[in-house]
Length: 639
Image 1 (cartoon, rainbow, N blue to C red):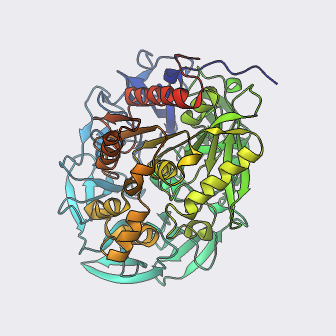
Image 2 (image 1 turned 45 degrees about the horizontal axis):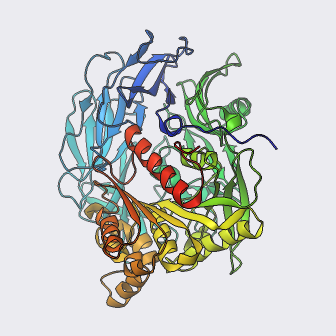
Image 3 (image 1 turned 60 degrees about the vertical axis):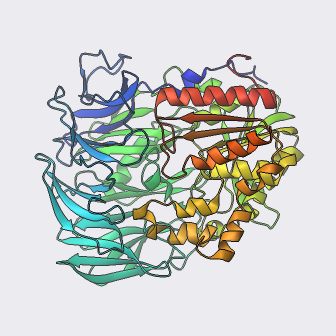
């Protein structure tokens, strides 16, 4: 048994990375990446062949900062197809009204330009077609909050031209060489792919609503403009890669895995994770496909990439993450997913076979001091197999440990083998951390997800209890020292745990969790209301139906606040547009009214997820103190 891991501060876990998310320019000469400046992550550019050993990019002579955001971190950016500009997305204090901004890597002193400067309007998608390098096709709800239109954007001038207008049923647009495509939804939830020309639509293919939660994902045009690569589970429990012929609508299998799903839809919602499709950034050619089980598997679908992939895999014992290459696909910059050494970034030159590590995002974190994340499987009471992840504190006998049941959001999401700073913080403070991919989670087949229909606060919660019982039976967990914690759906699950099974939890933490399911569904933002038919309405219920509304309220923690006996910590961003702050306000007011123990952290500058470093440091300092008081683990003041 090794010695217990020394305390690692909240600031070390949740401070900004020294560098992260590197992307190689199309000419293979420059690298764009994120680095801190004035406490916020901004975009920097430097020559690939420069000295990467200097720790401070803000003062390194060869590092050029091309953005100057002091209000909010930048977390998503990309090169244009010709490498002329860098584009990034940004919202205001978590309101999720994303704007598209342009930065000039050749004129770093010029301020970034807001290309969609429309108040209250959200960028809902930006496509950079390889055959039109000076143009972006952007989706905006500019005309009306509930309508998604397509615009052609000149990146140099900022000129915006309407390409297509939605008659009211378009969920998303896609441009291919020579065509405009639209995904719409019919009554009953089926999705339809159509070609759009002069206001007329030609249906191409239909996708069953039972197979599609939010949209057909992924969806990428073939370079010749005649096809579309998509993820499909039609006729199968597993999601595989399919090509749709845009002339005939015929769907032809391209690739699949016998056990794993194509790694979707999590990456489409969370830019921390790379897309399931690996595409050539300059040509759009399909290079590979990612599948994810306990670990990732990549299938090379291009002869050249098949030769490159093994050489990239040799660079790390992690899973290959974000991938970028030059136009010739000879020079590569990649990072890796790992449970204890995240985002390590490498350069590889296929022409010479030379490779070198560029940086570790968190050089101050020693992987040996961090806790391994172990995939395990638990069987639910009705026989359903539940993939889980268990993380145990380093150097501590795994017997009778205080435990945090950490529930992921969504619920249409999944946990996986990766580095998560909050998991590592909790393990470092002496807690066992149990993560459960309960029914409703994605990535484990269609049946696993659909088993959650009508089961909010029902079998979905039973799955959490069944997994918890497993680690209690094994002697790992002290049953009297368990907290339930999560964000979004996970916050709802925490409140359900406290209200519906109060004897099981010594504490509960809800981070932007919903407390009223009927209110949640009624409050969906206008442009997304049609899109939630296969998710919210199918899985949770329709509040416009009185019988369903009554059932939704019966599954809502707000109706059972009086049953909560454990201390509760509520965390919310005041600008949350997914789960309004009133979901936490109402719980806090009800608990305070009867003198119950509740702590409420409300952040006025954040939304559904806290982005800025100072916000997250305050959040996790509050969390560690709360858990130390009620479970007996360590905190930065007691460790």
